[in-house]
Amino acid sequence: MSRKKALIVLFYSFFGFCSAQSLSHSVIGAAGDTFHSSNGSLDWTLGEIMTETYIQNGKMFTQGFQQTEIKTDDLEKSTVVYPNPVRDSLTVRMGKNGSYQIEVYNILGNKLIDQNVNLTSSKVSFQIDFRECSPALYILRIFNTKTGQVFSFKIEKL
Image 1 (tube, rainbow, N blue to C red):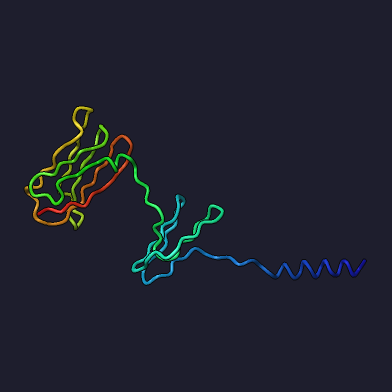
Image 2 (image 1 turned 30 degrees about the vertical axis):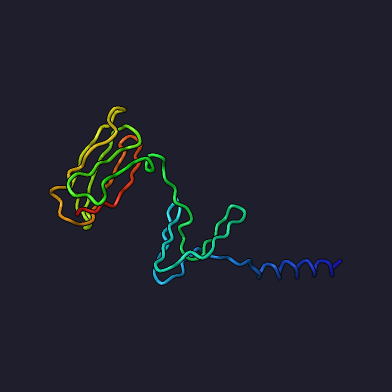
């Protein structure tokens, strides 16, 4: 009986000092970082190409470039911005009517245009005047004031 107790003590002692491997979430690359919040995490790297992605039991492991999926909304897909590059006037045709805040930023992040647009079922497009803007790259930001959805387009002014 004492031999059985000794084996049990030895068994628990051995496994008490042993622990399973624990892997921490990290990014290995030439440059990059990892950010965590209660809503999820963001990993980014520079100069990496996507090599492989493994998915098993709902867990995903991606080597290299870590953009595994881009989710877009139908509204973003159905929004058309033309002509791009633009000379004078940019036309924006939305996929749905609604109330939108339209902002145009230069490459330095300065807001150059800020306007509100209310679209109805009979009017789903509007114009943005670029005549006063110098030739450069701009960011068009469209914010749906009802849903809070935001999406952006890169615009080139000739």
